[in-house]
Image (cartoon, rainbow, N blue to C red; front, top):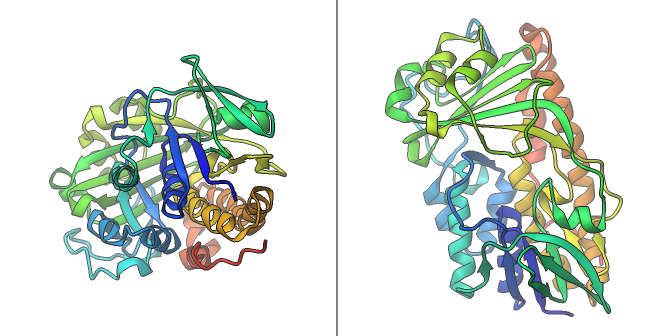
Length: 393
């Protein structure tokens, strides 16, 4: 089996794949286009399977220390605050409850998880991550592929992993040259110190306000010291390309006019420098995630809409299963085929259910939400375990 891997993209999926392969004895190099590894994003959800995958890489204590268990979630009417589904954990917003460990979903700041993975990779190889390396294309070199970077340098390895997100240059170069398509949704995000948010947490520690074509989700992270808020609204007005463009308080408020006073108060108290916005984009499904010695993982292979909160979990699962598949296979092509065969049914299921979930929670009549949908209907999606999922080589 080949033993060197070049990973394009130092996001969660690329770092997980690199760490899993490095622990299996592979020589790894990660090329990230950003000039430095800095704090990005805000809160994300880790499924129990993603947590178990990270624990299998020796990160259990780090994950438990940096994350909070997902509490009971209250699904509320956008205007009245009436409970539509789910349940309140604690109306005071103070009690975080008993920590069930890695057996339930967990909330974590994306930057905290990113730091955990970066440190783990650098413990194995301090020079493994190279920044300022923007990929511009991939071309064939004999039986392998040559990665070409904007600075004129090149890179080659037995395996090239495209983990460079929805706008993947690897995907663009080898798999699908069509541009991503705007999904008609804009997301806003912000972080609020918990002490400033406390007076407006009457619905409990985690709540989703359901409105026509709009939802507002909020939950605590970083030991309960920060409140992560995210609003998603249908729109045809997005013209940007970045996924973290600065947003203003006024445009956030404008998109969520008519929502419950607690929602509006939270938006007003979000530090302006923490507010970002981005358009949601989709890409067509690929029949193949690999081509010769190149494979795609995470959003580069299968971007999904965020209505189930499982995008980050899927990328982490990919990294764990990819390493397992390559370890079992007698050669690289068989390992990459086994990887996709093991992952595709789950990815297809989550893609379809994410679309359906968005349709449900952004329906024109939020009063019928509890009749149409119960959060428990999605519980099976969180039972997947990348450490034990069947792999056929």
